Amino acid sequence: MKLLLTSAGIKNPSILEALLDLLGKPISECNALCIPTGMYPYRGGGAGAYRFISGTAASPLCELGWKSLGVLELTALPSVDQENWIPDVEETDALLVWGGDVLYLRRWMRESGLANLFGSLKKELVYVGVSAGSMVTTSCIGETYTNGKPPKEDDVESEFVLVDTPEGELSVNFTVAPGLGLVNFALLPHVGHERFPENSLLNSEIWASKLPVPLYALDDQTAIKVVDGTTEVISEGHWKLFNTKTS
Image 1 (spheres, rainbow, N blue to C red):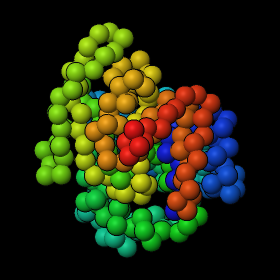
Image 2 (image 1 turned 30 degrees about the horizontal axis):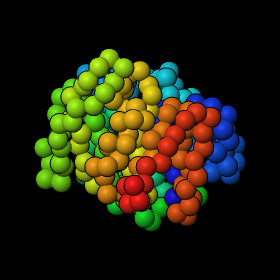
Image 3 (image 1 turned 30 degrees about the vertical axis):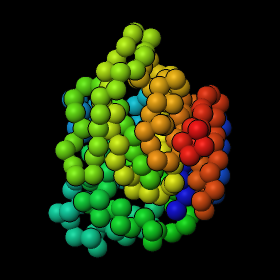
Image 4 (image 1 turned 180 degrees about the vertical axis):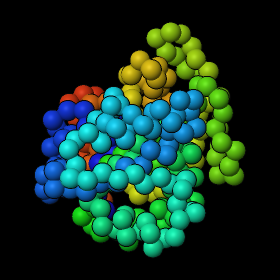
């Protein structure tokens, strides 16, 4: 399985070119399954999931012109016979994984059984993540909660940290948890975005210091391409790698 881990979808020609390279053929010849599950914990999450599926969200992905597009709803899979959905995953060309609450998405990746399939899927399959859909693939998740609290799970650790933002100091609940381990780094999306003032490059250094693995901080014009363990940054914007092992 190949990975294209984006902050905000296929936002520019460079990221689109990377996707086409991974697919190995035009998007119009590729079948895709989209996963909206991560959106549901938020107020208006159902509407957000619909915008993703219908191709009207701010992060381009479903609307790229796929040959066919199906919905893989993780919360439904435990109640469905595996022989009715696993072949769909095994045969598709791309998995399009939306953002939202990364810990909720991680939970349903596991409980649905999808996470157990990743090691056996065909090498040609392309996993395209957006925001939390990218973060969940990492070996260690570092997430900031400014409103509400993270889920209460045995492997989740959190602490309140006071950080600087353009609006002044902000108290942030920084949460650390194991990811799915498809890549050996952590990822912070939406760096510099006005909706996420805590995700600045300055604060990224704080988040990186609390993680046991290197952290890629990405703005919305940046993505990470991973093939056979080789990592390449694709960017028309700004990004930085914080390596906690050497800093």
